[in-house]
Structure formats: structure tokens, C-alpha cells
Image (cartoon, rainbow, N blue to C red; front, side):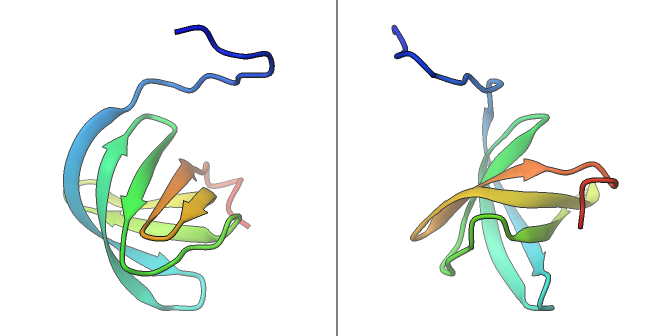
Length: 89
């Protein structure tokens, strides 16, 4: 597939179906399902809407908590980028 000018590629993501819990900065907890994941981020599906730029803590089974920032959001899903400890703010 040929990409247009300005296309910024991303790492390949693995398709998964993992139930997880998201802790929002306001303290709210949201049940989500991860539907794809890479070393750099993941896609979340949930009944709630996330805000672009919002910081989250994603509790992953057998992995613990991972900090992430919402990069895009649509009703029912959002894409996140994982953050280094120094990036969470």
C-alpha cells in the first residue's frame, strides 16, 4: 500500500483481547479491553469516552500498572502511547 506525503508510520501492533482496568487522573476506574498492543502503545475499547491528551494508568494482568497518554479518541475506543516515568505529568 502506498502512503501519502506526511504519513507517519507506527510500529506493528499485535492483536489481543485483554481485559484491564484504567485509573483516570480524577480517580475514576474504568473497565477496558485492549484490542491491540505494541511496545509503544495500545488501543482501548470501553463504554466511556476518553479525552485526547489525558493521562491514564492501565492495570495489566501479570504486568502491573503502565502509564499512558491518550493520543486519539472516538466513541467506544481510544489509542494510547505508553509513557516513561519522566513523561507522566
